[in-house]
Length: 563
Image 1 (cartoon, rainbow, N blue to C red):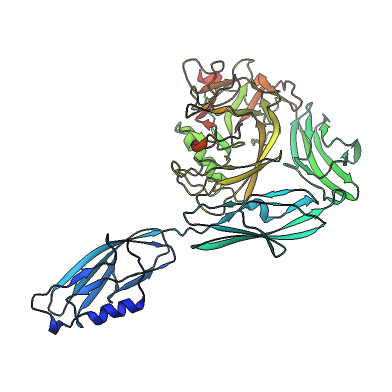
Image 2: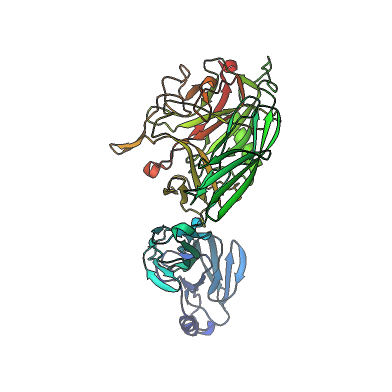
């Protein structure tokens, strides 16, 4: 294709070479020669495009009429415009000379996105805190382009690297200012952030809590603990309940076991050297189990009747064929999908759906709950199932979750309290970066060949990052003879091809026992019934271009009513 842009000098030459109508032989029809052999032009968004044909048999009285989508846009020999939206633009040119003769041409402009090398590295935007003389591996994500891209790292204004990834090692205590820049012919991007370096004894202590309010039935125990503690290797924790000290020492967790109904103020203090942090928690000890039980009746439905939370991890099916602006809309969409027996994808590790029933589901000692997925032999994407009683009677799943143990529970490769934080990409069609609470980093890859929605990060999540926490199983996906195989687990997981717990004659229907519910100590929870069920993707793995392993849910039912 010929170059699209012509300088004004060329246009001036064309105009001066046009003969006047008096010089044209009778019957001379205007001739138009486009400056594109195919009649198709390509321009990037925000860039100027000039279409400047060559003409014969035209003169001073010639009329030029340019139309875009049948609307007049120009009456000059050439046409210049800028388009800011991608897509196809159809243009017509009609040329009429002084003898009343005319000719016309049609052309198309394909407006495509610029390929600016956008940087996506949300983890770095708040900066890093590291120890002096330790390595900090910096791995920003840069949108791939077809253009040659250059990179540049600077520390305190001095260039230190031209590679995309950079390992920074601070040599003294101070705050370092880092700058990462990208450049190609379409544009530039940059990211600035700080790295605070401290000696080991001066490292700042930080902690956070997933929740600060707890509900449990009278006679039960609950473990209270910060979800994240950083740089507190020799800390002393002091726990007080209603002002009375209950525990002090290096143990960061406290087992609350008061059985008298009421509200308890729990204060925990962390001390390490000159650092001290204090957090206030509240524990509501509710009436004993059974107080708010809802016995099933003849009109009770087998299927769950409400979705309380649909929060997938990023994944290739997230935002595909639906768009939700908030959690309320996401929950409504999930309810619709379950009602119509269409699958819900939970995305990468930790993605979850929480549902409830119009009654309490009884513990029979045998199978009580069925979770329908789409597993088949060679395609298991396991999800851990959790259950909860409505212990405080408010009809909301804000009480205590109990894991239903499966075949992997208690094994060394089964990680309890595993957490992954996901970061929103800075531009469309980019991978989603993640970090876990074991020091690992990775990506949920964008697979544009199959799932082309702009973002795999759930659009109803308002924050630029969010953390999902649960039980992680070791992945069993394997490439065999060029085909990815997701091997099954023995029993106890949703969307898992298990001959032990599948409903006879119904592939994809996994059965679960409430009697398998365990406490935080791994002991039987002895729940007589449950009101809420959570299914959560239990693996953090990718199968090449097939993408992440993601638990799918088609339905959740009370097995006593459905069988």
